[in-house]
Amino acid sequence: MGLKESLAKLSMINIKRGEVLFKEGVPSNGAMFFLFEGQLDIYKQIEGKHTKLRSILPGEFFGEMAIINNSPRAASIVVVSETAKLGIINRTTFVQMSQESPEFLFLLLKKVIERLYETDGKIRAIKRKQDEDSAIAKVTPNASQPDSDGNGEESSGQVPLETFTNDAQSIGE
Image (cartoon, rainbow, N blue to C red; front, side, top):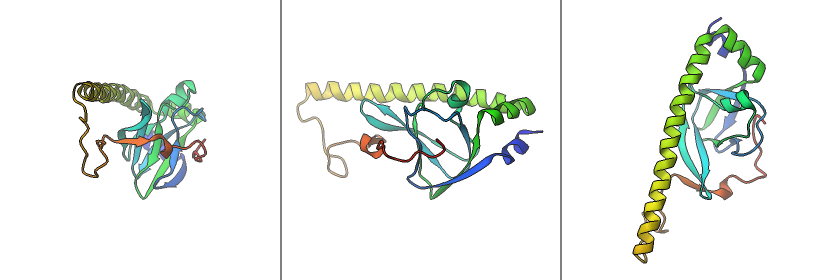
């Protein structure tokens, strides 16, 4: 059986814009996902703010660390499209897909390595910018200039922590 046939057998869920699939740091349920339709954004807490790292587009796997070592979720995932259609891959399904479709493991490993490099670079760039901004602020009083919405903060893809409240219902958990 090939990868397409394996994906066609997955349990499906549909979620709506603004819903949090899972939150960074919460225990995982041992499931990873495949996005069939829609768009999701990945947020990681960096120095007190949830910062957007990247988007997940149709055809991508994510949440693989939950399958491999059942670790807490490494980031928060939020639906940004009107709706999103996801396939759920539990550990049993993962093992079966791995045995039936070696291309699945190869694609997954390739993606994980690419994401590792991409995420590391993004986090380093964000921290470098924060360090630069901090250095400028120390040298120049009132260095913060209002941005287009006049609040004095730059739009950096950061979201206040309140957006990810502890009482938010996580999906698939």
